[in-house]
Image (cartoon, rainbow, N blue to C red; front, side, top):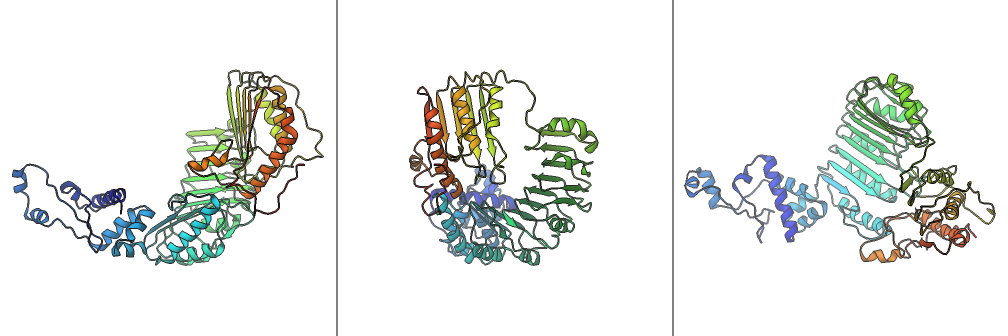
Length: 536
């Protein structure tokens, strides 16, 4: 191993020494030597503390250790040391030690992600390399002693591999299980193998985190403490079946589970302290009976709060980004719904008819939680916000979505809506990140060009990633482009055509127009299917 790896190894040894109560850190100073034992042991050089007189008073056992500085540790201690190393360091150590090789095949924690595997290519290369590396590791793992398994991928992985890996990972000893995927197409959901989990890990699993999959539980999990489901297909009946028989549950998080038409939390969950629920419109009823629930974060239809069961809540956070007047609702209703509340956090849209007389910089980030914005969302409505800021100088709009459902502007869109003329005389810089070919987006841009008389620079970025540079290809000198799904790559092509047809001709000669295109390497549309150029 290299010098840096050796230092990390020493830190792991020192941590184990402290945890096991050996007291070695009080009498020994660990130093990495050029040689190591065949059994994986390392040479330890001893250094006494105190004066020579104090050393003479040490017991005979310490004297023997001084004369024999090579320490031989039990195998289970070496295994524990090995488990503390990061994944790549542990793999390297297994290449030079037979003891660590055996430990590697029984490693108790396997967390696979772009970071832990050291993947640096673009997202397509990362998916292929991730599958190859994970498959190689899992095929060589015995499954014995595995307690933590985690997998994070920014694309769907073939079902064959997921089934194979989970079949190895889920054992009677498994305690933590995390499967996080971010597929381009939300209609493709992996069917999580519940039968394996309940038959093998039902008496050991403590923490489950799942996203973008179908989860169909048929019973409870006796030792489950934390459950996190994000965009998971699960019905109200299935979730109730799980919760009614998971009496140790302490934390529950549910995010945008479309099939969850109702939520019923039974009174048997006496250990449940923290609850987070994020929903849009599917949830029709929410009945909470957990007697000791103290913290509740809710994002959704505020009317559901009155369904009952929140009397013991001490800390409440509410937000509803498709609903107005959250503050008014809270002041009128919460005193009876949560009578013992101590901390209240409210997130709401500003709807008061007043102006921001001192606002100079405004940034609005719009995130499509379900992958895309509703076609009913009107980008042109943001012009009212700009109009309410008479001294505004910089306006930035960031739109993040993985597909677009708005109507694309076309040749038939000869009539563009116009807002009443208003003076935006101080705006100098406008940036729209994630610019798309939606008709209302074009209308907003045209409105700004027609009313911002002091505008100096307009930047339109046709994709949303981590880099802002006119030539994205240049970022390969320092890194790689952010991952963009094929639907938004093709949408960027439509956006470029829309800019050429509807925007360029309206840009005054005094305004600098900057159009950021997709990277010709990472965001090429070749091989992604038929191009959807609906802008002519």
